[in-house]
Image 1: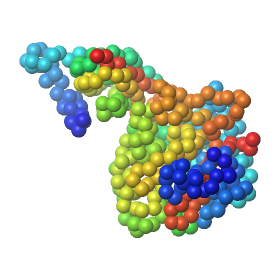
Image 2 (image 1 turned 60 degrees about the horizontal axis):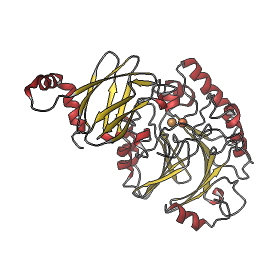
Image 3 (image 1 turned 135 degrees about the vertical axis):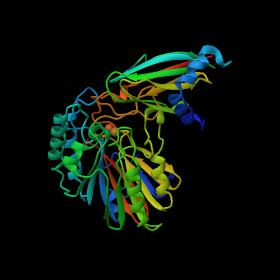
Amino acid sequence: MTASHDRRDFLKLAGVAGVAFASGLFAGRDGASAQDGDFHFVQFSDTHWGYSGPANPDAAHTLEKAIATVNGLSAQPDFVVFTGDLTHTTDDPKERRSRLARFKEIVAALRVKDVRFMPGEHDASLDRGEAYREFFGATHYTFDHKGVHFIALDNVSDPAAKVGDEQLAWLAADLRQRKPDDRIVVMTHRPLFDLYPQWDWATADGAKVMDLLMPFRNVEVFYGHIHQSHHHTTGHIAHHAARSLVFPLPAPGSQPKRTPLAWDAAIPYRGLGSRDIGVTAPSDYRLVDLPVAKA
Amino acid sequence: MTSRRTTLRWLIAAPAVAGLAAAGFAAEPPVREIRITARRFEYTPASITARRGETVDLLLTSEDRIHGFKMPDFNLRADILPGQITTVRLMLDRTGSFAFFCDVFCGDGHEEMGGTILVEA
Ligand SMILES: [Cu+2]
Ligand SMILES: [Fe+2]
């Protein structure tokens, strides 16, 4: 897909009303920019700081490069979100904290200073989010930005991938204060629908979250965990998975095991990157996948 | 399919009933017991072969920490706890290769923790 496609082509291709997709672009060259909206924000996901292995021999520098790419956007996003798996898991609580600390230092290089974090199971599942909260605070929260209500949901601090009754009650209480046509963006780590249960690409009680969201007309969900771009709708609600910054995972069910796709030295960072998201009222989202580094 | 969860609860609560059945009080064919041990990041055995129509009891236990046992094709899940046997009954009513995996995050290698039950005609 290139930037020269007409926006309506994207809509048709995607089959999702109100959402346009593009990939591998620097925004700002033509009509496919995420920056044409009322505002735009950037999503990073699955940075897995601390990973070392053959699936990404450059894991120690990929995050820095992706940050430099976002810092180079001609129009800086209003804010940046990290949808979990900030760090790669470790059994050692001290090492977990040093990875979280180093990650925090690296992302401080973002030009944008409004940065929001969410945990992934790699950060939070072994200690129920304890170390994560020391560095980044609450694992679920809301904020409002230019008429859009953002809800960050935690489906990873419970190692069984549950949102849990307490958080569901909190979500229900928050939603009771919304009107049916309020603009709502949900951000979370794991898919809230059964994307591919055979690979555990689901949230144990995700259906309860979707039930709570269903009465609202303008809801969009952004998440990570599956290390690839993916788009799905539950009724009128669209879900978008972002790519990772460590290694891509295979398309759901495309191979027997969900082992990382091999690093290709000829095409470094293939399948990795961040995402620029343009938001236009009432519920129009333009997604532009950004590469790790400019080719 | 709606009664799976109920069946699982019933089984954990009623090992004595299974014992009676095995002793010949019921006309049903005997249930094969298969022991599966979980530890980070593997199940032993990880591949199991069975016949279509067979009913098996999976006797699950862990050597180290809590793990999960999830088999989406049979709408089945259980926690596997150390020092405890959790029994899960499976009616293998169709042929195929059915994956199971750990769905309680257990560390670096969790994603690879899985196995299969091959059901032959
Ligand atoms: Cu994840
Ligand atoms: Fe991840």
